[in-house]
Length: 275
Image (tube, rainbow, N blue to C red; front, side):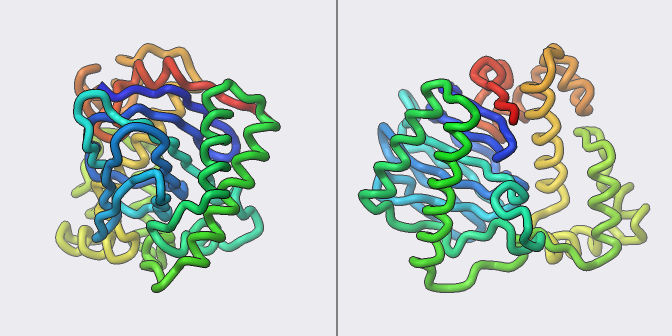
């Protein structure tokens, strides 16, 4: 079973070190996403329509709301990955929403200097850092990765990955979904309340956001689940019920399919760093 070796939540987003040996479902994040292989066998990740290797010589960067899934090579022992989820507002607080966190390319080379920085920061995360030390190290690493992604860029990325939504009906759908996301939410009802037929809703939503309504809703549910796990001591079953799951096992399956491990394992490793 995959497990979390270290998890930190803070103003920057999340910094995690995972031992992963199971595939994920296709999922997305509101945050920018950087994935570094730091030990064991390489793996692969599908991002939008591309297939990329996760090795010690490359970095994979995922823009906000880009669908992706993790495909491990070692299904027994698993490999070690250092994974960052970067809040766009922390990264570029003065930028417009569409420009805050957008990498130049999905995969880019890990230079010797970048590799050294990755390993130092991953070790810091595993060593129970203070907020000040982790925040500054993450800032330097993310800035370097961002610059490298654009220096090595060859083609422009899909602008839909930025999450910019212009259609008022889709904005209303997102507002309704965000008010109380839960597994019991009926997307057909959301479509009707926004004045859209089911086929038109699904087609327009994907055109506007780059993801399906189901994937968007799952992301909102996961955000609520992660927050509840690290910010409260509520039992896992109660968190699942509050999110619309009829059983703890159903919530656990959903969480593991999107994070790679059970919610109990994630909570055990998670710490919150306050400013």
